[in-house]
Image (spheres, rainbow, N blue to C red):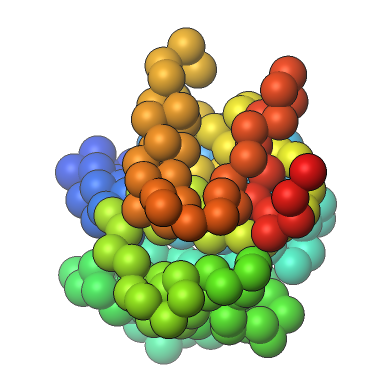
Length: 223
């Protein structure tokens, strides 16, 4: 899952970025509204966390730009403006949710999960062969045995599960599992693929396949 955070307070933006990254999200951050609408339209984000009091372009302007090009993209307003009138204005402008500062990161994360579930098909369990992922509990089992994954390992596996039986390129994985500032020369994708193989495939029929010249594929089908 990839989230865009538009927040002019550097400390708040870093707090949100770090917290969501630790939960396995890929997070991009902008500190003003100038390019936020364009970036939200160009990149394949799953949700936007948007401050209203931004330099150069207000959050309302950014929200209108997003809605004109991506009507269904979930947007959570996160702002110090917490009057009833402000909340009504934000929701009427097209926001899906509204949170006032100060805020608890756990609540922001829960609200994002709720929005992402709302916009997705009601499939909460992903299965490939005897591998199962519960997307609500973020738990993984194979053959009924639990597998403990780190947040980024889980994010990578969930992405592969959602694209089961289809090859996905390394660049597509980077775009959805890591953030925009990721070093594309790094071998971190290969490192995490190997980590998943060690936890999921070791001693069992392999489910993670390397598609030479393309990328990777999760499939129970054997060549």
